[in-house]
Image (tube, helix red, strand yellow):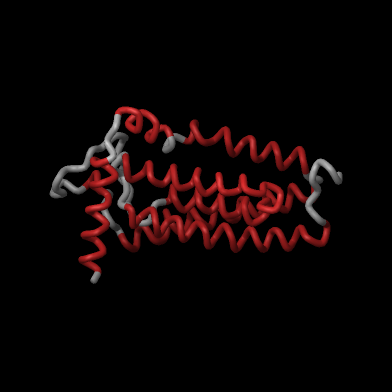
Length: 196
C-alpha cells in the first residue's frame, strides 16, 4: 500500500516537474518560491488590518497570526521533517528520469512542505477571520496557496504528497487558531471602515 502511494507520488511529481515544462512556467513558478515576490501581499494585508481595525483588535489578530505561523512552521519544519527524513526529489541521485532542478535544491528534508504548510496556514487563518468581509474574493487565498505549493513540485524540491500533507497541516493550524481568534474578537466585534 505504502509503496503504491509512493510510486503514485513519484509519477505525479515527474508529470508536474517535466510534463508541464514550459518557458513561461520556468520563469514564473520559481518566483512564487521567492519571499520577495509574495511578501508584498502579506505586507498589504497587515496594512489593511491596521487601517481597518482598532488597536485592541490588531493586537489580538497579530498575536494569533504569529502563533499560527509559528506553530505551522515548527511542526512541519522542525518536528515532522526530521522524524520522517525524506530526501527531496532533487537530492535523489537514483531517481529516473532525473528531476529537472530549477532552483537551489537545499539541504533540508522534503516531507512535509513547510512552504505549503505556512501559506495554507495563512490562507486558512485569514479566511477564518475575514471570510465574511471578503466574500467570493476569499477563494483567491486558496488559489494563491495552491500556486505557491505547486511551484515547489515544478522546481523539483518537493513531491506532491509533501505538498498535500503540508497543506492539510497548515489548514488545520490556521483554521483552529483563526476560529479561536475570531471568537476572541466577537465580543468586541471586528470593525470595518463603515462602522468604525
